[in-house]
Length: 574
Image 1: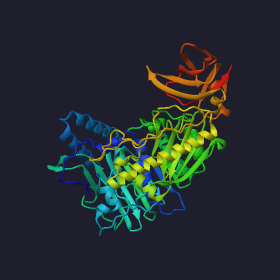
Image 2: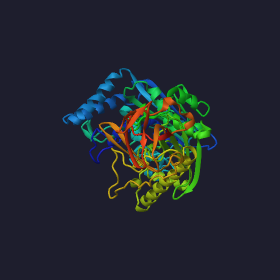
Image 3: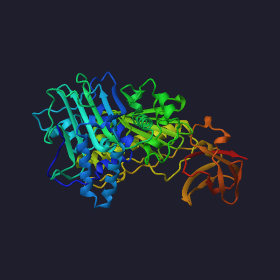
Image 4: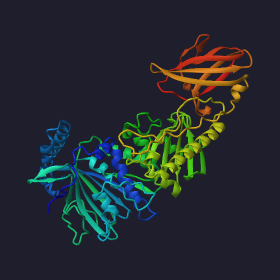
């Protein structure tokens, strides 16, 4: 038996755009792709899906056609080496292969309580789950609510393998399929021209169900247990791979694990609903989440603040808002507070996989966070249509029809309105004496990230966010201040604020500022540090003091903060 590569068709260069996109955040990509595909194929709704990630090594002589794969990679190098952008990349691949010696590293991913990938020989292969996964670059879904992008998403799996090679064994109620898959580049081998995709032992046209299982071949699963095992061989070199995989699993699937619908195993570590909190505390103990999360979610992502909000860790300051909203149907938003919370909302849909974290700004201030989930079928259908291939955003421009794009716009508008109204209800109950920071951006969903091209013929505008409703501030009013406004601008890396107060009478005033959070948790140590104040006012023990005159008063000041923050004013008449 040997590898069979496609012939004819378009020329394919070594730098596959899809693989490159997923390789940016490799552990996030692999965990999300493998786990979401398993959840989409859940077999028994009363039992959790189990996904297991195992790292190991295998002797190269036990890998079918290993020497041929190496020779074909060398052929790719010979074809493309005269182009510098490809020469360096292909040399890295060959150097990595040389470093294996006799033992080749692999990652094997197995799922349980799943249906396996279906393929029937009497139907169009392109319209089956296994056909889309093994032969297609498109998506195939048995359900409109499914999250997997089986044609494009498998690029995430190829990305972790320097050899871009995997072995797949899937078992369904129709039988089992065992096959090797590769994605190289156009190359010449034994005097013939071949394209990127290779298959073992079947021909490219289509696979076949096993009549007699080849039990001597590696990476097989028990044929009596439905599900899929995907083994990625010839891995790139990674440090602390187990820990990074665990962090990615926690950050992206803590909700599904906590709700008991998912178990993830990484080598000897099992994440389940009984221990997820302890693993969050062990691996991701910080509550605050850096603004660098999007650039490196495995390193900077934090699940603790969202987990605590969802599970009512601080019951007295946690509120739940449920509503049937336009287009999306039944939705829930939970809001909670802690001085370390990042002022973000984590967004989920029925599948309980994290879609995105949004810096919510004028919706939810720093010192708070939220968790949003849509649980209705219709809402999940339109949200899935608004997801790109990485499933990390909702953007109406990803919808394929004008009708769906309009539904997507209406969904985002309704979602924003729901969050805005929920946040105003929360504000009025928990900190009615705070002042709004006017002019801040709203919810950052519906944006395009770099690296993924929008469909031609559509241009998506960011939904307009209504400003927060102005709530009467009793603490200001009782001191005779009936109008106020706050502006902010960043100059030379420092945020400068301009506070305008309209007073009914003269009085001397002391103004201190704390992060917008529960006042009962605030101590003098939490006061925001004032580093500059305008003439006529002075700084006294980290507070601003001065004489307020009847009419308009403008107080300009700067804080010792590198990021713009939302805060409460504490006023004292002297």
